Length: 312
Image 1 (tube, rainbow, N blue to C red):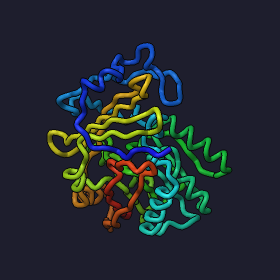
Image 2: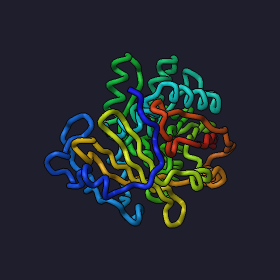
Image 3: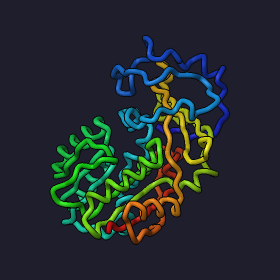
Image 4: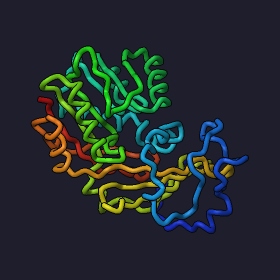
C-alpha cells in the first residue's frame, strides 16, 4: 500500500473530535494495535496549553511497547538503518569480534542481533522494557544467536564478571531521564563496567539542531487503519524537547495518548559531562543518516551526534 508522507498541520480539534474517542479507555477504545486489552495511561485531553505540565518523570517506563514498534517501526525495524548505525559504531570504536560488548538501552535487540549475525561474540543487551527484552530473546532464539539479553536500569548497571571492552548507547536512547544528574549517573555507571581503556559510543539527538528544526505538529499514517498525531515544544528552560503522541485507530478511536521528552545536548555540554565522569579522548565522530521506509518524518532521529570516549 502506498502511504501518504507525514504532513505538517495545524490541528482542527473540533473536526477531529467527531471520530477520536477521548473516553480514557471505555468500551470501544480499550485495545492496542495488536487487538489486546490495554490499560490507559491518560485520558485523551484534546488540545493542551503546556505539554510540559503533563509529562511524568517515569514516562519512559511505559512508552516502549507494541505500539512504539508499530509507530516507529519504519525507522527502528529497518535493517538498512540498523546496519548503517553499526557501521558507524564499528568505524568509530574499532570493535573486534571477540571483544566484550554491551548494547545499553538495546530495545528489541536489533543492533546486538545484527552484530551476532556478523560473527561478533560476547554480546550483552540491557533495556528497561520487559516487552522489548522478551521480543529480543525471542528473535535471538529464532536465529540461533548467542546474545545475553536482560532487563536493567542504565543508571545502575550490574557489574559483569569480565569488564566490557566497549559500551554503546544507540538509536537516540540517551537523555530520557527527568534530570541531568540522572543522565550523569548513566555515564558513571557505564564507566564502572568498562575496563580501563574501554570505549563508550554514544548516538544521541543533536540538541542544538533540534532546538530550531523540530516540527511542532505532524501526523502520519501507520497503515490503512492507524495514524499518529504529534505535538512538540521546547521545555520552559529550553533544555528538553517535550512531545505528545496520540495513536488512533480510525474506527475504534484513541489507543494511546502520552507525553515524553529528550534532553537536548550539544557536543560541548556532553563532552564536559563525560570528562567529569572519568572519560578521556572525547571525540565527535560525525553523524549517521537513517530513513523512514514510509517516507515520513524522523523526529529525534533526524540529526544525531556520534560521540566516542575512553574510560580511564
